[in-house]
Amino acid sequence: MSITQTFQLADVHINANKGAKSAMLTCKDGPVVFIASKACDAPFGANNFDRDVTAVRQNLELRVTKELEAYFDEFDAWAVEYLSANSERLFKKQLTVAQIKEQYHSPVRHSEKYDPLLRTKINTSGGRATRFWDTEGKVLAYPESLKGARLIPRLHVSHLWIMGTSCGFAVNVTDMRLEEVPIVECPFAL
Picture 1 (cartoon, one colour):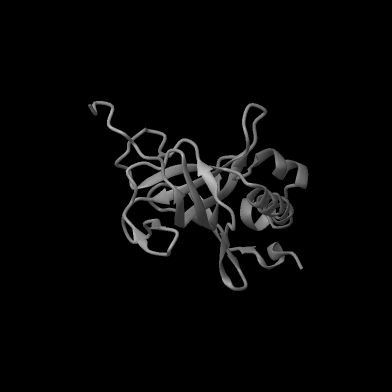
Picture 2 (cartoon, helix red, strand yellow):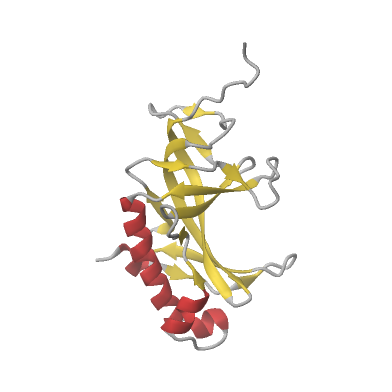
């Protein structure tokens, strides 16, 4: 049995303040969580669109391993079929699989120029702050930089977002075990 057979989306909720549309994703056991077994790397580190390093919610792109690619290939196939089958409830109109494929944005970004990247989000503070662990399972402070870090992520696929005619899923890194963090040297060291 495929793991995605137990996934389901709640009805669409509209945020009163921002007007953003979303639908929570769950499975029969609770939240949709995936823990990678192999380390991947974060080639660009954490940032946001405004390049505000103080923002609580940051983007973190992860270079996709074969394991992550297989998981999200299966997830995307499920998503397109599910969104089409439930399009009247979620989008207020019937959409075909082909129409869903046109507006669906996979969490994995493919390019001919570089390896696929998984778009994720991390929280730097607050109740939902991403937790960091060392290889012995001890809690670590938030690292100075994640650029080039090798890590094993615990991912939570939390919800479907809908903006205009586009949609996709938010993937949050709730925890990460840092396998290797590059040492940042002072450029003014003697």
